Amino acid sequence: MFNTECVYVAGMLHHFLSNNRAALINRCILKVAQRSEPQANQAASLYGIPLFLDQLTETLAIEQRSSRSGADAISGPAGGPSEKSELGKSAARHGHELSDHGFTIEQVVHDYGDLCQSITDIAVEMDEKIGADEFRTLNRCLDNGMADAVTEFAHQRKLISDDREEQAVQHRLGTLVHELRIHIDAATHAIAVIKSGQVGFGGATGAVLDRSLVGMRKVVDRSLAEARLAAGLPPNHELILIKGFIDEIHESMRFAAIAKKCEFSVSVVGLGLAVDADRDLLFSAVGNLLHNAFKFTKPGTKVILTAYAEDEKILIDVHDHCGGLPVGKVENLFVPFYKAGNEKFGSGLGLSLSRRSVEANNGTLSVRDVPGSGCVFTIALPRSVLVI
Image (cartoon, rainbow, N blue to C red; front, side):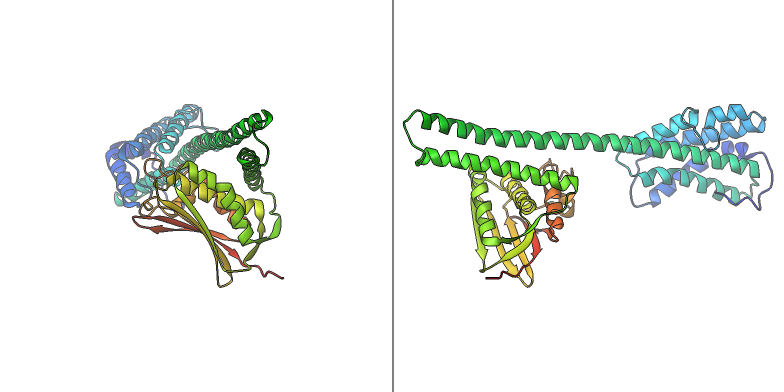
């Protein structure tokens, strides 16, 4: 709020604003340009502020004629609600447009702050005396305009977030159904052949049935782990032998590698490696990383899963051959719904869930770029002592 102790009653602020309209707008443009982030384009920034300035000028002129009710219709009463006033409607539109252009809420607030500073700066430069009542009107208009713009901005951001979350849920549900259908179809065909009496359970057809049932179990287990994580349920820690865990991952994921026509190799370096972790969450994290690797690695190349010890940590690496990561976008891969370069890296939801799953197990998930080749995702977990 403004300090009014040294202000003299003048009653001419609306003339000052009208006469210096262009200078005030130009001053706001300069202030916007001086900010490094976020950068506003001129069209988005110049819709709301000039209109707000005109409404402020009109409000002051009406109040100068002692018509407070008319002023409230333009700019709204002190403390709101002002959304039905002309100022409230245009401020809401300004917040909506800034949201559409991808700006942050800081940009919304800065726009009104820029105008406030520009008015006071030019008034000081021109030795313009502004009355206390006019300062109160200016404050009321700024408060109402900023509140309506921020409210609408937040509303639009929520709609966008809800829409993205809905799309992500639909995508993951579709993936779940697709994976289950593949396993169910294979199991159904295998059972049909076995029931015909042509083969028994102990042959290759029985192995197909077994793999399909195991695959269905893994899909369900992974989905349940992700649901637990989203619900914020505490992890169920147990001592996990890394060799057996990696073998289980390999058996579960090798058919996905075959489907993507890429080689899949695993190795465990060292004996007696173990971690204290939630098996389902850890399985989900590694599984998501491997699905990501199979999806983006180039045909005919290799995805490598390696587990080893380093100091007091157990490290699990997933190395793909996607060709390398975009410059400066490494950490963005873990942001939910992030997309990079022609949607090459999908929505980023799987990687975000992987990091959350690892962090729930007191670990970290990082990524290292191998330019021109691919990238290496590394899970680091505290090493547990294996008592024999």
